[in-house]
Amino acid sequence: MKKVVSGLRLVICILFVFLVSACLVKGQTQPYFQSRLPDNPVSKSLDEPKLVAPESPKAAEPIHPDGRPHKLTMTTKLWIASSLAVYAAAALDMRATEEAVQRVNRVHKQYSWFPDNYSFESNPFARPFLKLPAPAYYACGAALATGVNWAALRMSRSKRFRKVWWVPQALSVTGNTHGYLSYR
Image (cartoon, rainbow, N blue to C red; front, side, top):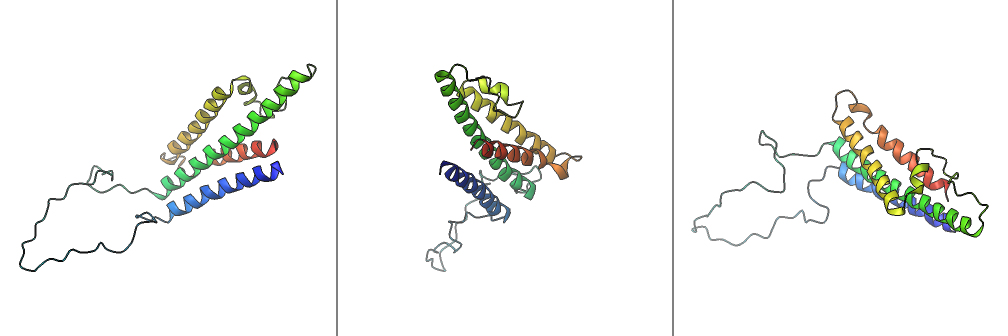
């Protein structure tokens, strides 16, 4: 039953990330909850002079050097959505691995002959990090996910790797999902 609940939790997180990315990709300029109707006009008489306040630039919208408002490109929106997926998959995998480490430590305390060398971890790059305390382990995992996202962002802005910028994030999500499902 625990495996089913954990699997459902993973599926719900992945669906949430894809739904958020689908909303971002549609290119809506207004939030969903804002009314698309015009504001209620105030009744004015025709003979009153109109006072016009000088327009100030909006502080919320970044401006390009040439004066145009900055709009997010499709690549940037997809990068944001896949970054969320990388962080979600990494967090789930780290939590599952930490639970496995705690189980191994409990069994090793009861039975001294049981190995505590963390040989259950099949990823040789992750095995040294399992000896760290839990907060340091999570910090290293978050730093690795941030590095993957940064590399993908740099690739998306380069001329050479522009078409394959999504590969590091896709590999990270795939690897972390496999790691999460292998401990269940």
